[in-house]
Length: 198
Image (cartoon, helix red, strand yellow):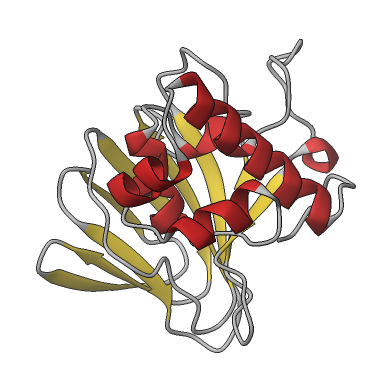
């Protein structure tokens, strides 16, 4: 898990996410087994995540957030409500999902700090070569994106699109969607969705 550009360690970030998941689970009076089963996780994986010993993929965390009736942003953001409408580049939080042996995962650099009541969510999705969002997901809302750099394969429903720098996209979030970096260099995508789910 990547803590750049904020200065937290990978372990700090993983522990924070785990504690927020455990808190949300306990608020809903769910056992580890009940939550794991409802989200399609193993109980042992959920236990590791809650203890900060593992980090889930973005699609797996999205499923868990749905069961907990929250969103990925609220489960991953330790920040209080911002006092300013401006978020300086060196203050943006970055969270990485799905990092494991042989994979660096997908990083989301927050352009808007997650907080209750927001209608929009905006991040820069950062993918190393051959990294992907893994499984297709779907949820209520709309998605809008702009490729800053790299080559990205975007899957929406049964269609596949090859996107390059300066290409953009827009689709209904109810359509199953996923993406992967098909180039040899890092890919970055400005990704905005409503309502916030990540």
